[in-house]
Image (tube, rainbow, N blue to C red; front, side, top):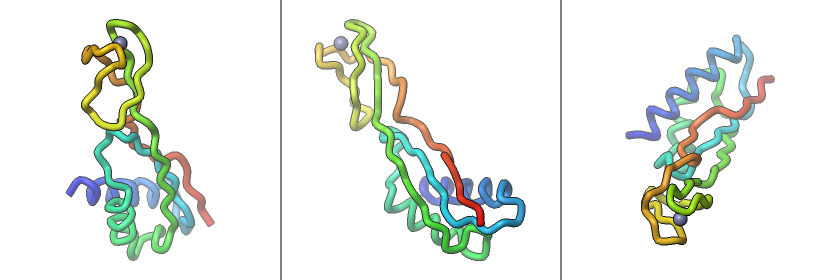
Amino acid sequence: MHELSIAQFVVEACAERAEGGRILRVTLEIGKLAAVMPDALRFCFDVCARHTPLEGAALDIVELPGRAICRDCHCVVMLDDLLARCTCGSCNVEIVGGEELKVKEMEVA
Ligand SMILES: [Zn+2]
């Protein structure tokens, strides 16, 4: 399960950086094209956080829109999924945003 490995990674990375402190809140930035289901990730995060400095921490998920640039007309296209098509009808687009997956910030007690 994709979300479980992401949650494990986030918990490990944050626990390492907290240097023994308790983590109250973690903010994640997730692009809409990263194929992550926020609800599933939240659930996995709670499970993975047990018996770690992140136990009981709040998880904030900021969803970033998918963005692409059309190679034909050079306009910016907003995407909800990977089926990218410009308003000019071209499928020749380059994805430039929406695949992010990173810890934006964390609050340590
Ligand atoms: Zn176009």
